[in-house]
Image (tube, rainbow over all chains, first blue to last red; front, side, top):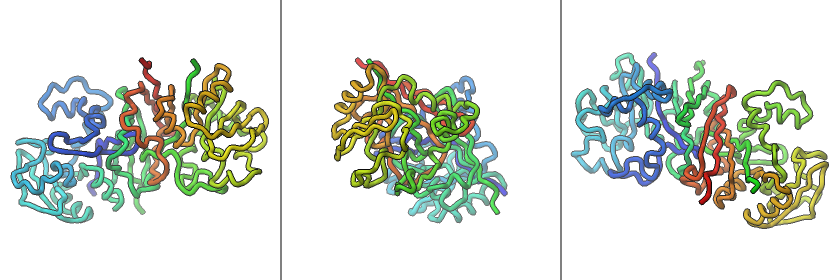
Length: 215
Length: 215
């Protein structure tokens, strides 16, 4: 069975994976680059952006796993665009003509629109529940794994439904004060997983949760 | 100048340093031992409890710093006893006849009572603000450092007042879902500090925040 994986979910010390006040001009809201700077410094991200990737780092060893063996992504509406994108028929996502996914992507939205192909990525807009979205994505992934790409509300929904096999969290030593937590309502979820932690020179702690075998 | 230090502040992935529903029978509330198991396993704690300390571990290297060079502690009312202890004139704290502090301790409470000496520890009950409590504790500490011993509301008040020089946080890979956060209202506080992180075999990440020089 293909796995359901979450990668590079950056979380602040106070447990928030996004800030508030996201907009077209400020996609990360009041968090700015604080949660994602470590990721933007990795060879994986820089290569995707067409920049000199530089030297691989311990952070990159984690970052690079995001698309290895992945055949489809599922993302929430909040990742595809800024608040209100559903009202703009011309909005095509943040990523330009060649989005970095290079696979089918299921976008969960209450306002579906026709599928959109940009480069090697096709976005499918579905108004459905996590389990059904996963079934659709698994079909698209053709035997490979499915990545749940965020944001935190979407990750939380998949965790709450116990659909996640591998969860990679990057704890960043910053305090956001407010934002969206992927953990709300998930008291004790660690019992379902085996966790391992390692800190890198950037100060980020990578925590991987691997689902214990299901009965 | 003596320093103001916080040690062994255990925080969940969702940013809570205590759970809910604390009581006499359940001092850690719904969190149980999840946040503090790593600490209870250290030689430092076991020695204080009169148990065989066992082998020192990386966690113990952090735990052991809690009383080195410390001449007084400040704690919040919520650390001294379970909800309602102020109504019980016979309550003498959780720690029996020989509390582990072995120093003066300022207990911040809106209902002061006479000072209480148990073994090498004297508790002074003060109804005052962080800055004034610190002044009192510094006098008691006789040139040594002052520890802010928690709980999270008290740590937050001292951080908000910019009175903390060293903050040691232990990030524990568990999710509490609800509780009290030491971070509320402290967006961006990391800018005041230099932080370092290290993970130990227990899976805990020790993050130390050292105050940058004040102008």
